[in-house]
Image 1 (cartoon, helix red, strand yellow):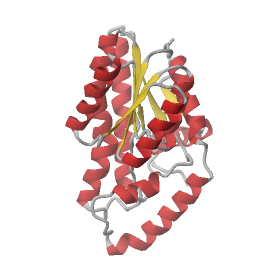
Image 2 (cartoon, rainbow, N blue to C red):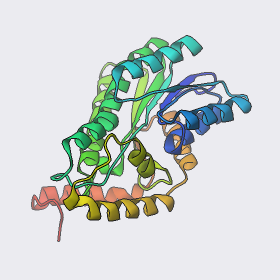
Image 3 (cartoon, rainbow, N blue to C red):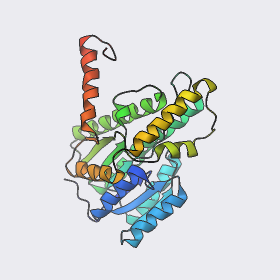
Length: 276
């Protein structure tokens, strides 16, 4: 079972949403925190929240799509606390646009953040966790990493990649009987600002004209659904409990796994993607 008290957790995308929920859950269990985000003002407020509550916490701006910034985040953690025991590669973005019309620049941006971010996280943080001799590495995927919906092509591709990355990592750790464990978080609708933040940090704002109206409607629907979703603090608790209990799959909406099963049944029975 993973110990939390006096251990060190690194969390990306930690200034709001699921990342902040994780930080609060870990802090409640006595962990020291290394928090990263692109929003420096929100990150400063988050670090202050924990520091004022007596939690040892430091923050660093980090663009997870850049290896050198992920390495600098790890250096900050080691220089401040000496070790890393838990790493949560959580930062993510998403823009509703059809796969066939999405600009290549948006494909690259989403995959750089949502997939290369966790790849860099495994590359950088896992060896340091192994040096500590105990710990856990996690990455945030999505139900979109298990079932692909329309109008979210790049996001689906990246999040499927995160599931594959963490499954491979966990199997490799088990094959060598490592004390380190791994997990993947596949949330459904959570009350976060991922849609608004994605728009705010998106490099280049223009959308393909033929896709703009449909994408805009879907973006509004997604945001409305998120606002009715699970509280991020509940997600943080689910993650902490799953890490403590050594679970690989972390599902916020387990009933949605029926959709995965239906897709597998169709694959087996008649090789269609969606049953009529």
